[in-house]
Amino acid sequence: MNMTVWEWFEQRSFHYRDFRDVAASNRSRPTATLILPAKNVAGTIGHILGTVASLQARTGLPDQVIVVDADSQDGTADIARRHGAEVYSENALLHEFGPAQGKGDAMWRSLSVARGDIVMFADADTADFGEHFVYGTLGPLLADPGIRFCKAAYRRPYAAGERSVVDGGGRVTELMAKPLLNRFYPELTGFVQPLAGEFAARRDLVVNLPFLTGYGVEIGLLIDVLAHVGLAAMAQVDLGVRQNRHQPLRDLARMSSVILHATSLRVPALERRPPADAPGLWALRRPEIYLHAVATEDGLRLDEHLSDVLERPALARMGTGDLIPNALW
Image 1 (cartoon, one colour):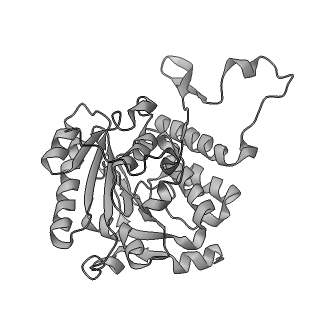
Image 2 (image 1 turned 90 degrees about the horizontal axis):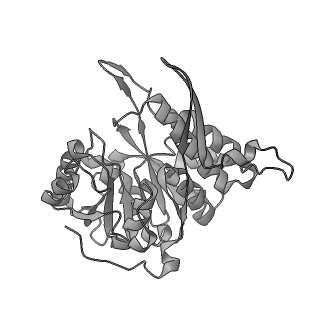
């Protein structure tokens, strides 16, 4: 089924209110797993899991709750365990691949312990997490078997001390991700939050997709899902407003470089290679090194940051798609 972006936006954009009763009204629904990649989120993980438990008690949704912890030092894993979640160390899952390389790697490894027919991911640092984050994101897949992937959409206020800018958040999305999609993947320009950490997909889809490590995972998956199932099988749902931690500008610059790097892995034309007779400058740095020139109180400085993006293979091709080890705690 071919759709224009405008047709897709009208037919595949939903609101969380459309799915308030979807779990209760669908007794034979697919099972669902909620996965929360977590790193030092002791201040928010308890509230999130308490909210999820209330939804479970009322609707049975989700059927499985997993916290994949980055060996947090602030007690995140202990809090999650007390709230009844299955807790795994990201470094212990598929340990033969070595230490986990960021969020995307943790997400990929978590599929080895996910049992649901539908897998949902959500960020664990959201301060105003509500039940609608879960049933809203899962809703389109529960209601329509033809939808294989659903991305959250929301407004992103930016808080700076006492001052709040209503739509000032999501700067990497607006300044890097959306222009890249407009230029190279215009089919995906209808997504309000292409980098949203909240999304749901059918498990038989995501285990057949590669995962990019780190912050590049979201845009990589969006592009790969489009290639595998087409735009008509994708959807987005309006969750209202989402408030989470905001990053300093310098960190956002590094995150933007990862988005560009990840996209370049899907668009070969973006990967500039040095000519055979390239001057020595090319030999001084690798493409995964991000150089950031800054002005400071002590003068000008050139910082060097590693923005390496690895690609993990589709889990189903490894024969581990049904591996369910015991929880570590």
